[in-house]
Each structure stands twice: as structure tokens, then as C-alpha cells.
Length: 414
Image (cartoon, rainbow, N blue to C red; front, side, top):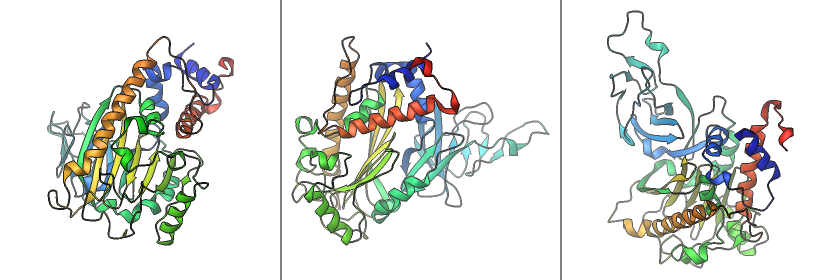
């Protein structure tokens, strides 16, 4: 049985409400299928508009085998290209980020304009046609300060996500913010373990003393059931929406993305040890209400987010191998906020730097245990791990659909 049939069989035969078979978390061939079926097909969050604020600003990402460069062109448009020279394939942009009026391949100096067109290729044949060798574009969309790319030749619709997310996030004006700090950690665990850990707060009380000073572990707040039965949550939504801030729980029918504004504990207004603001300058002048809590967003498979009154914390997940995942965290503040004057960097980042490292250890211990020959899938908590079950269901539904698309039924393995 080949790996596609093996994965399909395990998805079809999995026990609902239980963790997945070991191969989903450890097998390199399953990881290659995850890349093909998920990462090379879905829209992926890569960064923020404010990271390419000026023409020529760029940053790079690596998604599986694909190096990609994201930039702002001379007309102000944000574009993405495969970061592979059309000469002999060398990476054109070798830095993590930078700024340049042109993109010049360091190997033989083939030179590209910011729209990807080839401007210069030294001493080629007389009949060489530069117009046939532009950088290959990658589908790229920007909404409310978030940049997404899609590596598929025929990307899925982006509009449903933009329509849900934009009204919640636009008031926070992240397009005009700045990244005060960025951190990337490598977690020695499969990307699905990173997500499973993120999608529940069952573990929070025992592992996140800093975060639990302000962030509630109540499953009505952190779960995916909607929260309408929680009077504190509905009062929070009613108060904020009366002031013009979209807040109620909304999840797309596909289960791939959700937005919701949740209260913090007590009088806390920010993710600091004291609960007081980490930044004196508000993130957006449009959002002046007090105690807005945290605007939460997830979009599988790359991002979860917390937007507060004084700053935003955004997360990007990128798979490296079957057993390694890169998690990048960015702290965004008002573009006019000055470090040392309006905020102290350690105060701003302390809670999530600690929480991220604690989550890293949790994921790595989870991965260690799953490698054991004695591992077998275990039951999730219906009360606390509804979000994990929702993520696993989304993943299994996605891979099953894509493994059987085009009428290629594999019923023989079911």
C-alpha cells in the first residue's frame, strides 16, 4: 500500500474525538503529503503590510521546498514571487528582509524590476527574450494589514476570509503599525502538535503562570462552540458592538478560520504581569473603548492572533520537517510609539516569550511520547479540547477530500 492510500485509510478509520495515529506526527512521507495537500494549496499568512512599508522593502519565507519573496513594488502593490532566479535557479534574495530598488541575483547578477520583470541579463544570446524570464508570481492578498500567499496554481477563494476578518481587524489599523519585536523558535514537534496545543487551554493553568494572570482558561472563551451560553461573554460582545467594534464569535462554515473578541480576566487590559497597558500609545485611534479584551483570529494552517488595545501579538506557523516546526511571533505597536518612552520591550514581550517557551517544551514532550512504540491515540476532553477536535476534524476532512478528488476513489482501502 502506498503512502496516499495508507493515510486515507487511517483518516477514514480514525476514532472521532481521539488523537491521530503516530504516523501523522512522525512519518516523513506523511509530512510530504501534508505539504502537498495542505501547505501547497491553502492560503498562508506570511507577514504584515507594515513590514514592506516602502517600495522595494521585502522579506522572505520558506514554505516546504518553496522559497518566496514578498515585496512592495513601485506602485505600492504588495507582490509575492518564487525566490528562484530564472537563469539557473539560484535564490535571488538571500536575506531574511531588506530593501532594494531592484532584485539582483547574486550568482550572475540577473536583475529584476519590483514587478518581477527581468531588466538585465549580461551577455546572453542576441535572440534572448527577457520578457520570457520574469520571476514567477505567487498568489498574494492583503487584508487589514495581514499578507497571505497561496502556492497553488489555482488558489481557493480568498474573499470569504477577507469578508469575515476585515471588519474585526480594520479598526485596529495594523496596516500602519510597526513590528516592535520578532521572535522565531523551532519546536521539535510536528506542526499539527503545535496547533493542537494552541487550540486548547486545558494545559494553561499547569503551564502558563504568566499568561493566566490575564487570559481566562474558560472553555466558553477559548473554545469553538460559540460562547452564546456564557453571560459574561455575551455582555462583553454586546457592549463592544454597541460601540462599533465587531466582536461576536464567527467561524466560517469550512472551519478553517474564526474571529472573536474575548474579555481578559478582571480589569486586565493587556498581556502584562500587572494587566496594565504595555504601550502608552494606543494601537489605533479608532479604538478608544476601554477593556476591549483580545481580538482572536485563527486561520489554518499558519496563524493565530491576539489584538489588544495597546498592541497586537501575531503568530506564524511554518513546517520544517515531520518533527520540526518554526513558530514566529511578532509584537505590533503604534508606528509612532517609541521604545524606552512609550513602552519597555521586556514588559511588552515578557508574557508571550515565557508562554512560547513553555509551549515549546509541552509540544516537544508530546512529540517524545508519541514516538514511543507504546503510543496509541487517546481521548480528548469534550469540555476543554473542543478546539483540538475541531482542528483535527478540519485537517482530516481536508486531506480526505484532496486524497480522493477528481473521482479517484480509494474505496478499496476503506
